[in-house]
Image (cartoon, rainbow, N blue to C red; front, side, top):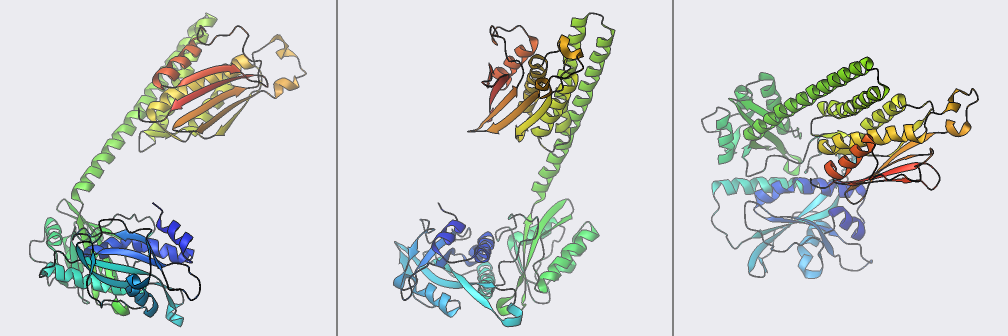
Length: 516
């Protein structure tokens, strides 16, 4: 299904600022839908020839969580015109909320139509009074379960009418605060209505329960909410901050959300001013008990810190092992044994790199490019060759899970060492003072890209290439045996070594990135 932006750009003449405003409205209008007990449909006028009747396109829809829907089928993408949208046309043209009219039927469902103009206020509104209606919200209520409304429903509907007028005035939705997510308390979590003086005129049962968790056992109605919240908060600074945000909403501002902690409970609050026709008449405060959510967050933070500490200790232990192997290598006289121990040092050190990175990460994944660059740099420093080999990386590995990164770094370490040592082996000519230009241009390239949930890695050099009789499967080299075992076993991928057409060798590794 096409998005709001796609539909608006394709079928209407709305500009980027208009569409951004509609996006903000769609991010906040669940509140209005739930308070209205009604479906909301966002209608925008379709581009048409001059003189033709105006048609409307539905670009977004939301259903109430507090009442049955009036529409079983999605209306997004539907274009309507004629008598069916007369109420939308009146609201759009006359720039007013339309409430007159008899109920209509959608199949067997009776519904009441209302239309709310969506106004985008310009930056010079206060100076010039300029504003523009860019869309219409259809508020359609399912009447099949109509009954005498309760006190809760009456307060919801009154607040919904105030917010609807703010939509028509262009003062709702509010601008989003930097770093603020779309997650926020909803009507069903708890609703408190304040009068212009900041006293509670209505509190839903869930709102009353949330404040009871904070330690207030009396009824909220009649209480000055900012003073009460400040008094209940365990942290006086936090309580004062929350109280200031409530007072800011009473002044007509849209403050960011705030959490309050008291008696081991945590309540998330969101204060919204009520400004129908630009007149501040009070505020709406939504509250949500997030005690269990924050408890789980703290548990996860503790777990993450423990895991990072474990990775840090594993890294230290591996570095200790590498140091012991290095010390042992210095005491061994046999060249082959010394070389084997030195290779083991490099392998252990490459694994330690992964754990070092994980010890600084908040999850079990690593940014792998930095690890590859460090392993490549180390390979050129320790490889047994006198040729100056240039290392270069193309593409990006991106973020990889730890179970892939640990094995992959060992594979790349072996491939890079092999590319340097066997692609550009030391020779008797290394003592000649005049350098060979061909050998000066020695290069190893590590390239990586992702394709169809696979990571494709190539380690290529421009060295002397593989011998004619070389068979990777039957090679007795320990490094190649490690590469083959890890590539096909731990990584569940494939590895191929071959000569390049332009000279040199390349190793092609394919690693699946799906669920393991």
